[in-house]
Length: 396
Image (tube, rainbow, N blue to C red; front, side, top):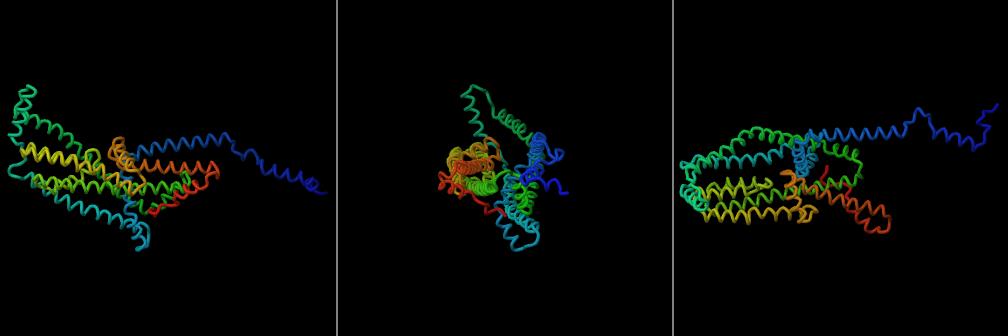
């Protein structure tokens, strides 16, 4: 006796097999609602633990960002060492980290030692650092005549001494904690720099798999980060060097001693947002006025610092950012100033990067919109597509 299936028509047998393949047993099927609930729970967990991780890692974001920028700058050195040495990744990464520390710390140590010697020499001068009595008496007399007050030089000196103690006391109390945070940040930067060099390709591959974005667009964002990071570092260092040189010229012309110390301080303060080099040439101008009783030199130095030293920063940074990245000079200037205003010192790095990412995202959106519109404008779509790189050249 033949099986029942064999006796069935061919069309009926095929339809039966299709039903069996398309409708597995209900016990093996996850209902669609359950899958949606599971997906919503997963998204909620990702958001929850993402926010917690952000809160935990918030204090280390700036050191990690600095480490990533160091990788962009010293990436060519690392690739050369890796090619010549061969061997494991950690060997070239460790040697690169050591060389970078030597390149940065040795010259910095020499400069700080020289500047420290000048500072000690100033403090050990026989006459000390005293306010010129003639200047103070004249200032008190002008204030009394203009306001009707009855101030005295001794009273002003005592009040200034009290204000100095009130101002310096909290700073001295917080100094150990601040120095500790700076030290921890430096350690995190060095460790992050090492691991970004040794495990960077694997980290990028993992992020590429997890982020639901076209890999071409991910590499474009990385290229933008590479370009803007290099431009920001170059612009900051070049502006600080130029301001230090111009400031040093001004200090030498007005006859200040310890020009090297003041020039070095100008270089470091020029890299500090908001405060800038004005903290040094402004203090030097006040010193000339109140301690040296030289109003002409004080006014000349203040005018030189305001019109030339500090103003050149707003010229160099936009030009360098425009030359080494795709940012317009106006956007470059506004991104730096707005970033510092909104985010503080870290804004000098985050501001230009955010604007560059916005430009890149708009270019990606234009490519996607052209692809959705169809082949009506193939030349424009092909041109935009050609501007999307497949992989940034600086990424190992």
